[in-house]
Length: 126
Image 1 (cartoon, rainbow, N blue to C red):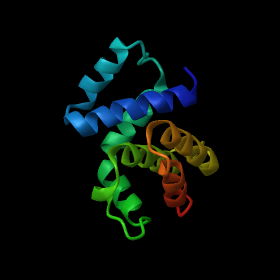
Image 2: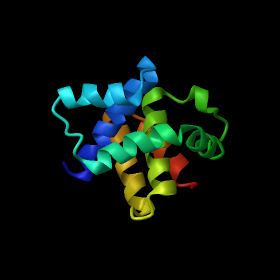
Image 3: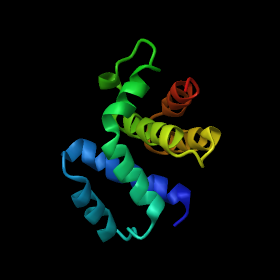
Image 4: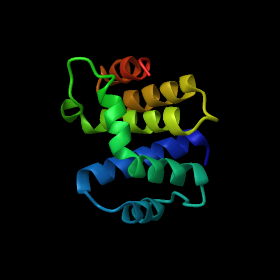
């Protein structure tokens, strides 16, 4: 699994956690039933890292939102922002522009027409 695929699986896991309010371990098990491998350390690091640092990440994202509150942000965009913010804050080996580009791609795939621009606008302020 490459990093792009791992980010997409991490998005699916974290999105599921947000909607179903289940534990990370249960969500990771569910995604492995769909064929993803938990042997991918990047996937596990993203999913567990975002979950563990969620409050700090949400505070960071909130500080970069203009005329929005995090509660108003759609679940897909919020999840994508959390992944990118985690990478940009806690994973120094990934250039910020890579995290932003990957987040915009996910937003264009899973969000609406304006999601990519919104995600790019928020993350570019980091």
